[in-house]
Amino acid sequence: MTYKIDKEKREKGLKIMEQMGLIKSGDKPISRDFMAHIVDALYGTIWSRDEVINLQERSLITVAVLVALNRENELKIHFRGALNLGISKEKLEEMILHVAHYSGFPTGVSANQILNEIVSDFKKEK
Image 1 (cartoon, rainbow, N blue to C red):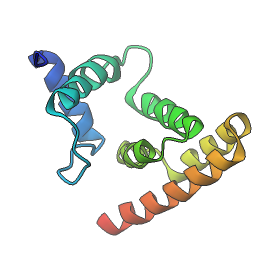
Image 2 (image 1 turned 90 degrees about the vertical axis):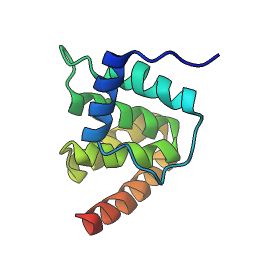
Image 3 (image 1 turned 120 degrees about the vertical axis):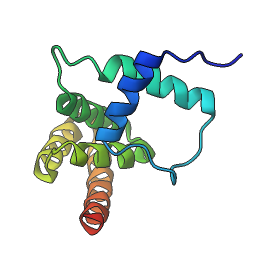
Image 4 (image 1 turned 60 degrees about the horizontal axis):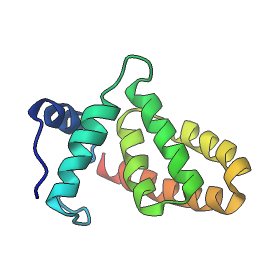
């Protein structure tokens, strides 16, 4: 059974993902249905809720959770998204320092290394 597309959610989700620079052809492939669900349900439904929490705040929250969970692949994607949304490297570093006190210093070290790599690549691309 394939996932059914909700055009409104799809448009909202794609718009947010484009703002964050998350749509790239070089990403590791995932199934078409799973990607459709991510676009529609996650970005088109959850990330598009800006009445209380804006897009930058959602990005920072997401990155904090990914740091705490030590999800390196996803951190690479979401650090880039945060930078594309105008969140500074300094703010991301401060968040990592804060989170590391709760999730453990190894997660903070890993996140800092990933952030430095992504910022370096980000600067080269701009």
